[in-house]
Length: 309
Image (cartoon, rainbow, N blue to C red; front, top):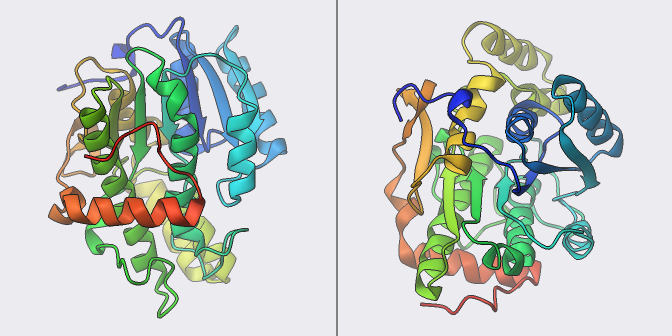
């Protein structure tokens, strides 16, 4: 995959893709490049105004693109169910679990779960489970979940998934990104046991310039940190276009292995996509099973179509 770029994305004609958080940053770039290669792309975004604007902008950049906005609030499980229930197509080739929040002040989702764990993991766990029957019915389908190199800062705490005992914003973020990787690991394991050809893989962008870094400090009123993050984005981060490449590789390149983790090849920071290091706790079968069971209980979404192995 040395030197792989968006120019290497295979033809996506006839494929249907859902990209969460596609109104800006990495999600927008991924959606745009998939549409540029001929995919029909659903922009799954929380804000109707921003999602509609992103769709209009994308069609301006890629004339003739087949894109549409559908509202999805990953912090509200009722919204996740509504999205899956109203999905209008009879096939789903690609689900990109991209949306996320980072290092926010403590808060909870509509269902009462700590926001970072609820949005980054539980919302995507529920969405994937509800769309899984369609993915299984689509030959060669993939689920790509966007994690982060920051997962290495913390393992999940199965006894305190919602950070009720103590909340530290960066630890909670790292745990949610570990949850993304454990989910991918366990999903890949269960798909293999089921004999399905759906590929579950993960990716991360390295250090990419998006609005993610500045949102948390802005919400907390930490103006110095917000400015510091803005400087980092400007002078040290790679572009959103560069940061989206690992996701696009995992989503479209031939022979992507199940449970692989793709990131920038230059020290996990920037550059063309390559295999990425991951913490050993993200490939722990027992932890994956326990997180899976807890996620089913918390979301009410059970993967009955997959038999436990």
